[in-house]
Length: 266
Image 1 (cartoon, rainbow, N blue to C red):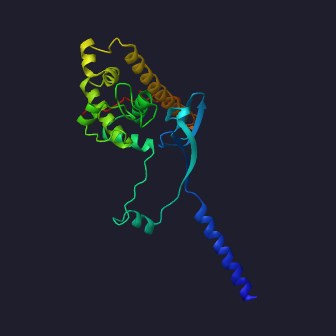
Image 2: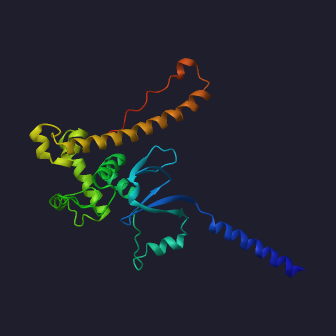
Image 3: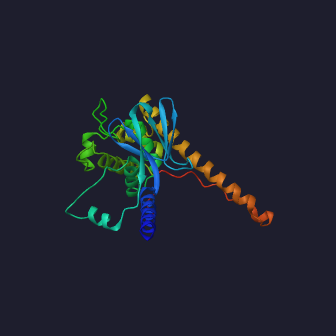
């Protein structure tokens, strides 16, 4: 009888351990692109030829990708890493580096050059449709379509490397914003047609391609900001409804202004 109790107790303990091991700490999804790259997101909305990938559960941050560029989806389960595993991963004897999801690449470059990640994503969408191997008829390369001469000036050795390309393109966009006193329209026009053209025409050049390019990015970027502001307002409503302060003290704060594309130097 004692032996049977010990066996049952051991089986129960084993079941509890297995349950703890297989329970994921968090789950998200990866959109696998045709070029082998991936975009981590919380959920998605297919809108015909375009698929919207949401980076957060509240729909305030997202990016649009051509549906035909997505070959499939994979669930990504994030499990806690034991201390001994972390030590082995960081060990010089076992160097390992997993490919970063595109949103991580964009967030890192945006933080480095003080840009809004939504803006960088909008530029990538307009430039390459998130194709890291894209080559334009004029020879521009990669996600942010860097010309070889520009890539060299920015120190980008491999324009097809997503991390290097986005870092170089973000740096170039930041330089253009500073050059035009943070006028986003002029900076985008210069990114597409070149600074000399913008200065020649003292603004957006009268080229159909450039004007459509600027309009597309500004429209997509503003749509993201409007969605974020709408979400922020919706969150303010429950707080106002439950407040018991006097009416005069219940004035809603002015909605935050649309986030600027980059922070000017202080």
